[in-house]
Image: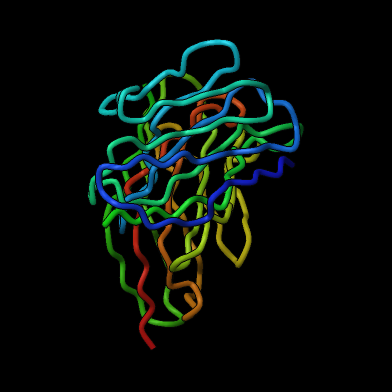
Length: 115
Length: 113
């Protein structure tokens, strides 16, 4: 199984600022995924980050608001730009299953509060 | 495109009663299906998964789910609810090995004493 480390685990930010969330995986993976879980809601896929190419964004999410970097096969960052209170959510990094595991692996998430 | 529909945002059962959480999926290819549980202020925990082997899948904590292709369903059941089962449950689908998992809206389970 993959071990995913996310930083920071939580943060409180001022509106109008930006926060970059880091995701480190203990093995090389082609695809990494970023999800958002708004308070009391389900997980929504933001984008798929492939190493060596531009991230693919889901409907309703744009690169200007959520720029993603994927410099190598074990690391990715998600930036939440020009934040507003509506961006207060848990942001999770995920990688596909490996070996016998068909399910995706998830980091513990970054709990973001925008004030 | 894949999607998941969970019927009922809230389900309330008495302790000891049957738990039934409904999930219907849409997928153009044979799906992988999952049920996750999330306790308050905690991360996701995988309950069980279907990956085209047995259609009746047993998971942790006494939960099981049955894959019914004809009904495009993957309902989660537990014969006897326990107070500790109170949580949010998410049904999810992916089309390949963990690729792009899509989650349902979730069902919050309440267990009454």
